[in-house]
Length: 173
Image (cartoon, rainbow, N blue to C red; front, side, top):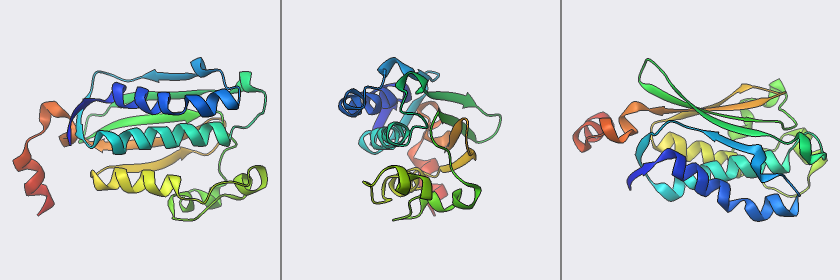
């Protein structure tokens, strides 16, 4: 655990999917990051995995094989409350309403994914969800298609400027 710039964490996640993007002939500049200078007190490796997995899913489950249509945007929004929000928007296949809550379950794969792609075990989004929950956050699907939007809400207490060990220990009791 340490204090890291969120943008650096996301860029490391992005860099880790370069080989997959190259194989799929995805224009890498179609992955845009627009995050304020937020510094998080988190497990860097775990959060790199979160963003790498969301990007891998965006590549694997893209709507069109025409790669010029591919797009992922990762943006940060400061809320007035106790949360800081990260939206991951992509041009993917989308998710049926009936699958909206199930996609974070271990082993669950949406019908569209099973039809289009045979690999995958339904572990990635479950892992993403667990990591975010372990740090007191939430992830949800706020828009089902065109674009698909995953919203990550992280508690403000994770942000370095507000972080104190005492506050974390107190809230965990």
